[in-house]
Length: 48
Image (cartoon, rainbow, N blue to C red):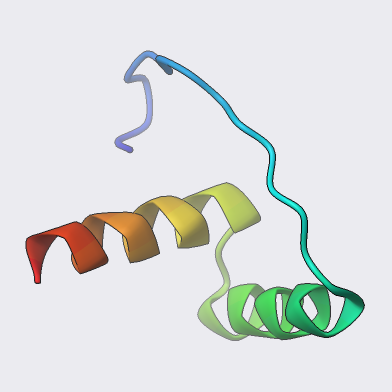
C-alpha cells in the first residue's frame, strides 16, 4: 500500500514458530516491514 493511503481493514493471523522464523528472515532479507512484505506478497499472488 502506498504511503499516505488510508488503511481499510486489519486482520490477525496465527503462525507456527517455524513460519514466524521464516517470515522474519524473509522480511529482513528484503529490508521491509512485515506489513509491506505481506501486502506485496498478497498483491502479487492475486495478480498471478
